[in-house]
Image (cartoon, rainbow, N blue to C red; front, side, top):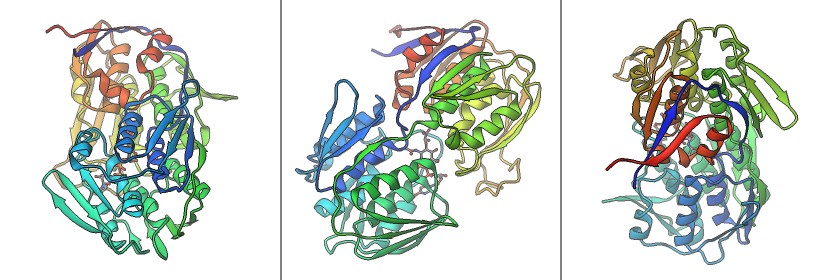
Length: 442
Ligand code: EPZ
């Protein structure tokens, strides 16, 4: 039965939330366990759907995943790793993009991999050309299949000299998970350097990998023949932390985010302060609050790390609709990540999308038909409306807009938010949100 979340707005969100392991690291560390010749332990694991999807994928490949009923820690044992039928893997098609990262580990472990057509948030075309190109450079044979791709490496995998066209997080992870056991040395230029990438490098180093992080976005990986299991505590989810921070500002509230780490949120905190938000870094996290008075309009440009993350802009846009004046957001990472603004406009926001690059950051989308710049005019009082959750971060922004609005909203597709926000509804209610989940009328 589909569920609808009824939201009665006008209440500031106040209280404490705890964020645990990063959605954009934990599933990758789980896949890395495939490379070890002994069990791994992963700690600070959030209860989110992406973890369930990867657990299922690992299980059908013979990897056992045992969850501690108290701590939620995972013990992953790859001893019985085996190939899975494309039919079994297909059952997970459309749920997530993580399956593409099984390629390297499966080729090292069993010599082949089948990857279904990928899912993930609809925020652009989300091609995998960088992934397939680097796998071929390692010596893999990539064949397009009707419902996915088959990849094999009968003669093993060898190191390669690689240069990514764009510092892609996924493609960098693909290289790391393949190069660590390839014969010889791999050099990767223009690598992604996000904190989640650095945490994955820590995981692999614990397993016995040799990974040199050089300046100028260069990684040099010296392949080894054997890797062992790891014991690792995942870094906190900075994207969830930034989402709750924007929720505090948009609703005029005050939220302590336990687990938030200042150094991984540095660019966000600067923008938050310029917008007019206040934050206090405390012992176990960061307190985010609206100090009263007007919010300031801003020009924000998303970028790869250490810039302002693309995953932070959606909830922040809601706060920008409440700033007095004209703000601009130039999205330079994804070509189509403003679809969520339609619902905000229906709630009373004034947001116009443009295909021009409205900023100084170099961008791949200028002079093409992508509406990747947004002009937001505030302050716009918001009123309730009904909406369908489009993707993870856009969905979060819709919910906080409904909480900031006067009146009642009804959100369907709320389960999408559970992909990346742990215990989302409990957290909302714990912050005083007047929300109720009910069965959708037939
Ligand atoms: C990861 O996605 C994150 N997802 C995204 O978070 C995040 O927004 C993104 O990195 C950027 O930081 C996970 O880690 C599960 P990319 P990923 O490869 O790896 C283009 C969220 O809400 N590209 O860095 O898929 C691509 O189209 C999600 O938590 C190619 O052209 O992102 C995009 O324009 C959303 N070809 C750009 O690179 C490729 O083969 C960045 O993508 C791969 C990517």
